[in-house]
Length: 71
Image 1 (tube, rainbow, N blue to C red):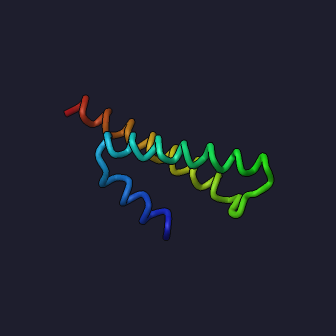
Image 2 (spheres, one colour):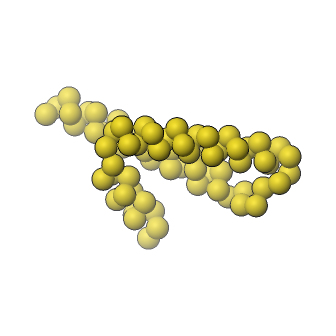
């Protein structure tokens, strides 16, 4: 159920908003990797969640760009 809600929220965003959000998530992912290297990770599953969300956003950006070319 949570995934559907996330996907709906992502699809409502513009390409520019998605790109900005991807950069923010990449920063957070970097920080989590740094914490993991030090052994201070509170939520290790968060890394996987962030990677999946980045992939979802990139897929939706590609879909939106493809639909703009066809329109």
